Amino acid sequence: MEAIILRTFPFGESDIIVRALTKERGKLSCIAKYARKSKKRFFGSIEIFDSGRITVKEGKGDLKKIESFNSHSKLWKLRENLSSLNLASLLCEAYDHVIKEEQSNKSENSLIFEILNLGLEELTKTKDLKTMFKISHLTLVKLLENTGYQTKEKIKAPSMNNFKSLIYEIEKLTERELASKEQVYLMFRKLEDG
Image (cartoon, rainbow, N blue to C red; front, side):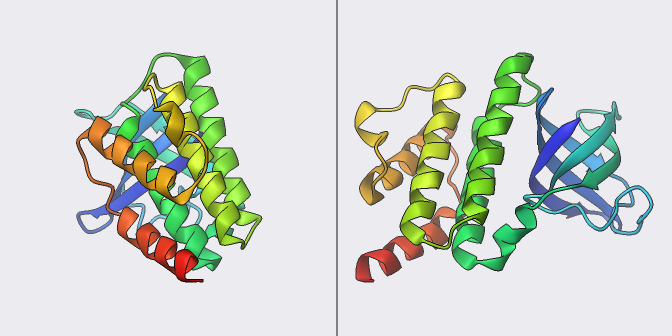
């Protein structure tokens, strides 16, 4: 199934815990056993923003087991520019916080997947900071609209203040702080001073 990697972190000596957004099953928490050693099952490493085909099977407990992941993404370009890297990190973190595990609505899962995928792809196509903020803003608004949260009408229009309000709304809804927002706020200051 198609997946975008939202988050990864090491587990033990050779495993990786992965949060992936899939078209079919929504957000999944998985373990990639021996991923830091196996080049056969995992061509290269599994990193945030990677997009590709993931094969999972039921594991012990809540974590699914990743059998294979084949990246076919052009999203690696997000890592070439610090601004796109920071905004893409914020998007993936917000999607990770807002989306619940394994949503059963396949059409909703597919739509949410496509919105994030499109937002990340568009971030790779521009180096203009204002355009990057507009893309990120709209991607976050669509996330909230398509997961059943109501956003205040006034924060739907892209602007710096509305973007900050949108981040605040996401933190309030999820009762979790977005760690990547601090880097994004530094970008705001750079743009305002600019």
